[in-house]
Structures are given as C-alpha cells and as structure tokens.
Image 1 (cartoon, helix red, strand yellow):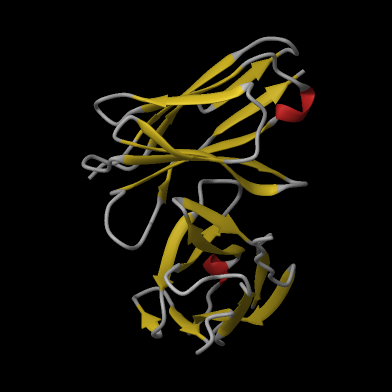
Image 2 (cartoon, rainbow over the protein chains, first blue to last red; image 1 turned 90 degrees about the vertical axis):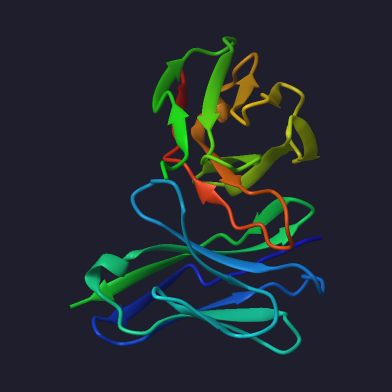
Length: 108
Length: 114
C-alpha cells in the first residue's frame, strides 16, 4: 500500500535552517518527489521537486537519499512567513500521493 | 500568466442536493487534477483529466464525477450530497506531458453540507 509519512509538527528558530523529513518507502525508481506548503487552507503552493539528485531553487533545497526511500526539505534561513503546513508527495500514475503534512512553526 | 481559478469559492448545500464545481487551468496546461481535503483524511486524489480523457481515478464513490472540456477547463460534480462531503475541493493543473508532474493549485472551493 502506497504510504508517505511525515512528523506532525516541528519548531524552528527564526534565521535557522529548517529540515523537514519525509519517508516514502514505497516509491519506485521513476517517480518524482514533490514538496508543497499550505497556509491558512489556501491551495498548496509548489516548492520543489526531484527524482534522484539533490535540487535547489530560490525557496529551498531538496535532499533525496540514495535509495530514494526518504527525502528532506531544507529551508536555509527560516522566517516567520515560512510558518505553514509542509507536504511531501510523490507521483504515481498521474496522481500525487500525499503525506499528512508537517506543521512548521517558526519562533522569533 | 494567470493562475488556476476555481468557482465558486464557497458553497453551502443541504444533504441530498448536488453540486458542480468549476476549474480553469493555467493557460497551456492540459492536465487537471481534483483533490478533496478534510481535517481527518488530509489530501485525497479524486481524478485526473488530460485532453478530455480521465487517466486516473481515486477511491471515491460514483457520486463523484468529473469532466474536462476541449479548452482544458474542468468541472466536478457531486450528487446526493452527504454531510461527510463537506471539504475543501482543490483543483490543480499541470502541462500533463513529460516525466514530472509539477502541479499548480487553485485556491479551492469550500463546500459545506448541512
């Protein structure tokens, strides 16, 4: 059964790096990993995605383990505006399979 | 480019009624996906359409249906509404081709069933 697991909540101090883990142990070799965030029940906002190699964009970095069973989203310098629910998802047969999300609270 | 738009944003219905939700994708995107989000079940996939064809369907009863038009706009319909259908319904669009499936979401339609 396809499964994606994330810790329910995490705290991070403002200005520090926030590292959000995700386990996607049933992912197969050609399925991408995606990260989104959601603020106040708005539509999820795309952050980053990757397949095998580590990825970086203006918002975040994505580290995927060599066996692809888990990944970590890194927000390098967290700000108060990064407080949100962060979702990990992976792509299988035109659908995204979502984790339950991690509520990230950035503390001043 | 304009983002994904969904109408209406809020809807209140009573049990037994039916409802139609609309989604306009980003210009040039040919794939539209629908998701249901509830506090208890999280984000759950309903269905995905590409060029008017349903390519995948989630584990929802037949009361949930959808379609896509030739201009890529999509609608979903829920018939015989139940209290448990109260949820945020999200539409997402993507190019629909290529190896990755980067989806962009609309603001959602908040459906309340009384």
